[in-house]
Length: 438
Ligand SMILES: *[C@@H]1O[C@H](CO)[C@@H](O)[C@H](O)[C@H]1NC(C)=O
Ligand SMILES: *[C@@H]1O[C@H](CO)[C@@H](O)[C@H](O)[C@H]1NC(C)=O
Ligand SMILES: *[C@@H]1O[C@H](CO)[C@@H](O)[C@H](O)[C@H]1NC(C)=O
Image (cartoon, rainbow, N blue to C red; front, side, top):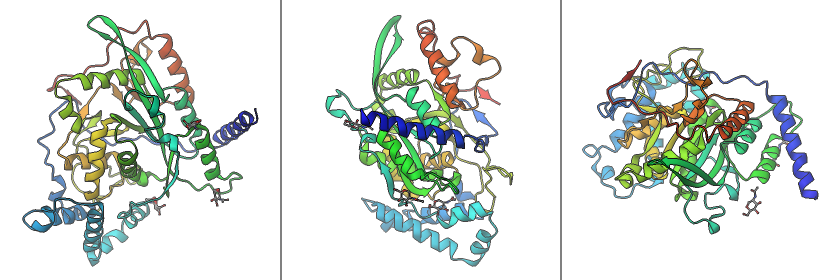
């Protein structure tokens, strides 16, 4: 029919443009860690670690907020029962002007690298408009016929021009609807599964000298797939934190019933069936109700230092942030409960934005006194050595970074072909509490 050919035509355009832009600069390596611990107890790391350094801008800003909320210094604030968003917004602004109106601070800001100055000048703003929000992207879509709330929402950070990545994800690990999986339970093969949803988190992109209007293309893509969530801010590296903050807000209003969130990059491979089984295991554990309140799992990085290499895209000067980073789960892919997403939404109102998104999430976690759990199935640094060549390698993992769209499709195919052979292969296990990975 006519609409079919219209869709094919749009698809053709999208692929063509993706091909033209596929020469874009590759992402440099994501991570800045120096020490990674497995399954250690991190509770000993102070939850107010940033108080100790009063010289750096971010530390100063956060300290100002913390002072306002200190029950001894400001009992009237601390005892407020209901702390509204407007209250936190005014607190963010107040603390910001208190710190940045001082001459020494202004001089400090002037000396920051351009990108960081740009970040600071937009740092108190979070209220960006939603530009595209397909009604189908909401977690309730299709709920009429569904017998339970969605198990998992896949929230994938993407950019306008990464159409190929999105397309590969849609065809492979990002399929939506009811996804049936099988697991071994006491020697028995058991069918489980869950309703899956998908949304791509996208900012705004300017492409100079382009014959195409990329905004219009993104709208067309959303008409085809109904899985785009776009906001009105520049899609730059230092703006990625806005994707967390604004996603939590959207989630709280649109997806509150969803049990789990996967949030990750558009160049990762996720073993969704394994993830579904793993999440069912978590829900069946004793006291799951309570643990879900702070459930977050991923590749946990502890005691990382900020990157001080000027050329790095992760560069954070010590005049901006001092001290170690809080424990955080690497942003390539992390899974947390819907309950925690809603708590993160609330607490994020009293943490100043930080330019590295996964570190910011770690900061909010620290504020909630919650701790991410490390799982060795999250290979954000890829397989080690020849491990990948083993027949069932991909059946032992939850996620691996990084894979291109072609690889995603090949790997997904392999995964289905080897499924029955590898059914008995377990997920990589967490090491004992005391073991340390150098
Ligand atoms: C692109 O399309 C959008 C939406 O139709 C429109 O608002 C915008 O002005 C267009 N931009 C250009 C450069 O034509
Ligand atoms: C959105 O949902 C409606 C109703 O469920 C459906 O008819 C339509 O095809 C969906 N659109 C997309 C792009 O998935
Ligand atoms: C973030 O987005 C805003 C709004 O588009 C923009 O003005 C600002 O320059 C961006 N910040 C960075 C650090 O790129």
